[in-house]
Length: 313
Image 1 (cartoon, rainbow, N blue to C red):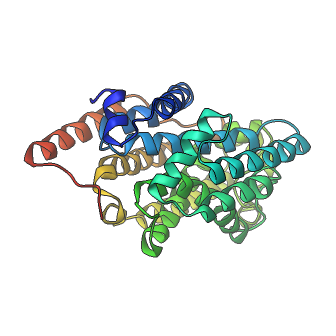
Image 2: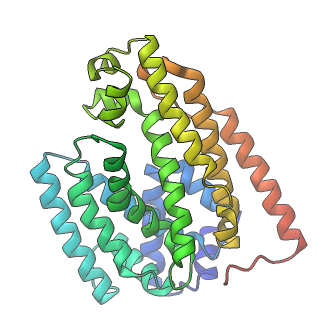
């Protein structure tokens, strides 16, 4: 694995202050999201690693502010953050926050369109900060459009010089549909404990299941049918991501392939758990991620021996 300094140099980040900014962000991401960070470090092309790390750090920051405190504290925090982000993007270095300086430099260098960032921040202040569940499937899709998709593009969009084209963005919209469904199902127990119901209320009504049934982890035929319907929707969404690797920059393909495979492992674990997913969150386990990472690392090493991988379009 290349050293962190090597990745900074490969990305063309030579200014001492910027190198320190990106290093601070990397440490922050490692503490909060060790698995995604290590996956990037192990599998992504070195010249992409700093940009993608800055993207992860930025989305983590927005998520944290949108999910912390009372609704008013969330709104106030996001308003202040949006102002700080605007300053960072306009000045590209004028922010007092190393994370925002690094992210602003990443977006300017990679040419990520600012509308993805503003849509993400707007969605954080509305769809996420005021989250009260979904009445219907259409509400879920609106949540993806307002918050989850722009948030994903604020991160993954940095892989593309000039930002993603329409086809690439649409592929990531399908990806986030699957990822969000799997995440909501895997975290069902924890979300319910925190007062969040992330399955559409119309789906519960369709199966004659109440929120109390879910909060009480009742293993009934109706609850099992509901969870089966939700996992089938998630499986169909995951199947719809087929072909995304052809729209990913070559230097990031091993990472996305690994993310997709692990998503499949987690969904399979939810399917096996059935109503037990209401009693405890469903993780990846240990063996599947390790096996996937080792195999992906070996494949990347074999590809590297055949010649350099370009990340240019």
